[in-house]
View 1 (tube, rainbow, N blue to C red):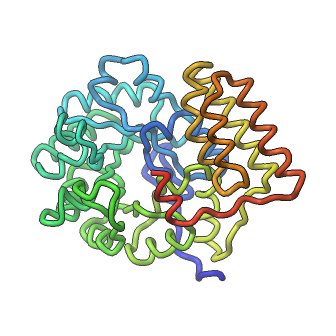
View 2 (cartoon, rainbow, N blue to C red; view 1 turned 180 degrees about the vertical axis):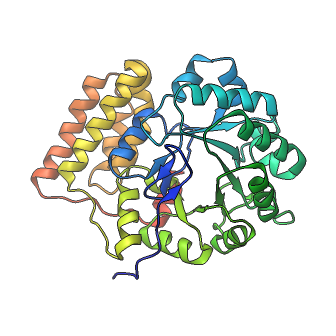
Length: 349
């Protein structure tokens, strides 16, 4: 089954910030690190946003924070979070000094530590004056485009994303991504793509639809119902870094691209695993890679046993040997990966 192609056009934010394919990988803590961003970009993502970085940690040049802010090519986007305009401005200047092409501001993080403990992330949707100060300070601090990621509002009694979009435009923000949930929903319920249309109607800025885009059909439906200029994919990329390219192809042509053959998937897994080990070192890399290997294995025969064995292995050499023993018989027998259903993808979050 195919669809009519959608109007997926490049988004030019100025300077080096031209998003030729507005199928964007969302910022995800513990996922969109440098190895993953490089891989997703290589496989066709139009833009991959860094993990959320605390502005105060960037200003203090925390070692782990600076590693999170390492860049993956152009255009590159660094996402910052914070509640102090001066700290956000200084963190943005540091990120641009390190080569960032886009600064993204987080008004969407729902976790208690950020939204309650730090009055940042989605908490800023409850205080439009404070939000405006942060947006203005960040925009005025740098000479690259500044974008914004937010939710529909704090809760369903306060759906102020359209009003905040107008404020953002007046402050100089260049693009807005909207997750179709409130803060109080966290990641439960269903993303409201229709509501995103009200944000699109409230501003002249490019708007990106985010939330529950787990299949190509989801992307097409989200574009149609929201009127958005592109889509942002989160957990739909878990174990499928090639998925953004499939989405882009489907939106442009109405035709589906198959998953890579299993031998090619294994090569991607090995490339990703070795990059993680290089970037984080033997001890950290082995442990950080476990979730990715678990996601890659979903839908393959024997994956549960593979995950159980893999989680017990302490060294990369042992993991690489296990990968060979898991993938090679499947490849030899012509096996293919069963596409995960929506429930499995939702559980991965």
